[in-house]
Amino acid sequence: MHSTNYVIMFILALTSLVAVGLTTLREVTYETAEMNKAIFNKREVIKAVADFIGLEEGQKVGDLSDERVLEIFNNDVKQVVVDMDGNVVDQQTVNGIYKGGLAEHIDMSKEKKKDEKERLLPLYMFSKDGKTKYIVSVIGSGLWDEIWGNIAIEGDLNTVVGASFDHKGETPGLGAEIKDNPSFAAKFKGKKIYNDGMMALNVRKGGAKDMTYDVDGISGATVTADGVTEMLQRGIKYYNPYFSKIKSSGK
Amino acid sequence: MAETAVAEKAAVKAEPLFGKKEKKLITDPLGDNNPITIQVLGICSALAVTSLVVPSLVMSVAVVFVCAFSSLFTSLIRTKIPKQVRMIVMLVIIATLVTVVELMLKYLNYPIYKQLSVYIGLIITNCIVMGRLEAFAMANKPWRSFLDGIGNGLGYGVILVAIAIIRELFGKGTLFAGSAVEMNIIGANNGIVEYWINTAAESGIGSWFSWYANNNLMVLPAAAMFIIGIMIWIQRSYRSHLVDIS
Image (cartoon, rainbow over all chains, first blue to last red):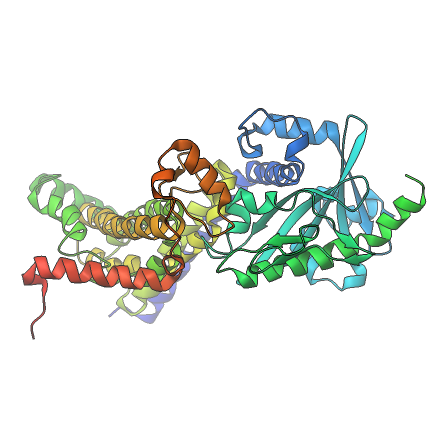
């Protein structure tokens, strides 16, 4: 048996050694990791408009080089931050909360914890050949943890033209299919969001009934699919004030 | 530290670097002393990650890394570790290595990190790592502990990938889904999988088995429990000395 002093000294020495080592490693890798993260997020946004960025046959957004992703994002995507009343929030105000102050810097899971009235909403506008598509970011809850997605909406602000989903910890092979199986996100293409002003887009268990608004669910992943429906209906509704401003401004 | 380094040098001289005993440390966990089927350790993660092959593979590689190096480091300082707090010391070592894996993945390949972040955290709770440190690394020299770590990591990985192949094949009709070498082996027709069917039909293999409907039981964790049970049954009926008659 070792003396108590020895035990305390040993643990202190070990933990400080580990702490210094890990901190150093984190500091060294931090900048590259942050850049990787930024490119990853930009790629996620672009995935929603994958049909319009001029991919070659059989190519996926995931195969694009980092440089190409940055090029598309810098040239074709404009980003704004809007609040729940539909007003555009300027970069300086956002900068006070998220370093950088652009829509891409917004941490959706932090926004999810805020009061509904105070949330900031990132909005991306993808313009190519004179046509604008709006990409909204939504976040909700799946079975185990958060799920989120980017939905690309046509200029009429009603037709979905693309979607991408991701999750933190859904079951592989079941809930995780929202991300792993590209056919799930593809099913959203062409669906309408509003029916007579009401949110109608949804994921239906047991197969789509109304082809205008319904998307096939995933068998064995009812909770995740319900989470996707809830996330879409609530998340897109947040943008309604801003969308009605665009519409009334005659665009 | 100096003492252990000297002791280690002497050990290398006295024992061959890769003799019969060392080889046994690697091969034993693959067969007669398998961490999952014989020691029955690490079952929880075996149930959780095995519904697809690719996450199982990466999980196995990560466990081999963590198992090997935590054994090595624990063995290096084993004479200095106070016995009262040895579990805590082991946990610190394991958690450090897991954090290193996480940081390096973030640095080198962010998409893979995103895909696996949940599982990487799970390694800390994997009882194989802790079990081997307590049972082997605390009482053996560094090189052998390192080999023992690799062996047990591999023994875990082999079973993990075997279960994942069965589950993914019969649960989803594919192999290596989500990676570059994705294969569609047997057809499926439960609505959402049209995408897999189309690619399967193109490759020509799937059309032979297009009558196959996915077995949803295989996707659930319970299937892994059945498969592990059957594996244990088969292994013990062939190797009767493994059966504990008492």
